[in-house]
Image (cartoon, rainbow, N blue to C red):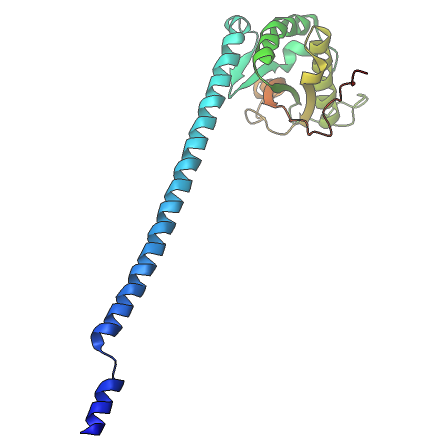
Amino acid sequence: MEELHDSEQQSTPVWAIFSDLMAALVGILVLVLVWVIGVQLELSQSLAEEKERRVAEEQKRVALEQALQDPLTRGLVTFRDGRIGISGNVLFELNSDQLQAEGEEVLQTLVEPLETYLEHHNELLMVSGFTDDLPIHTGNRYGDNWGLSAQRALTVTRALIDKGLPKDRVFAAAFGAQHPVVPNDDAESRARNRRVEISTVPRPELTESEAPQTANDD
């Protein structure tokens, strides 16, 4: 009789084990639910930020296109994906880095709208030079297309600054024969690839150490 009583005391009730398992399961489900809610909130925030960024980019693109309405209407430049395109044939003679008179006139039409755009946007203008895939003529001062595209970009950059754009808001970049707009299949397509593009890029923010220091009044 004593042995039976001891056995009943030592055995754990089934309901108690089931209760512990259920409590553990509920705890796991709560943790999973909290994790899922956290992921959803983070995803929603990321989507909202991406949507806001795209809206801002579209607004800037529209603002620049509106500023360039006159040269665009006159067919002096193209505007695609936020980049202003100017034909290399308009700006330069073949294998030359010297601006033609027609090129000077085109750049002059761009100064006022670009100036207006920069006044309302904290951005820089990147002037990029591109060439076709043909090698540079023998005797040319540039050894390859990289050198020619770099100098053409610098020439346009300096011309824009001379015509009134702030020099701290414009810089030059060279791409050579890279990134053609169309395959270099014939003379017409190569002429399209010889170009200069002007695009907007974010302006780097100065750190505290880089910011200009103002003199203290004594």
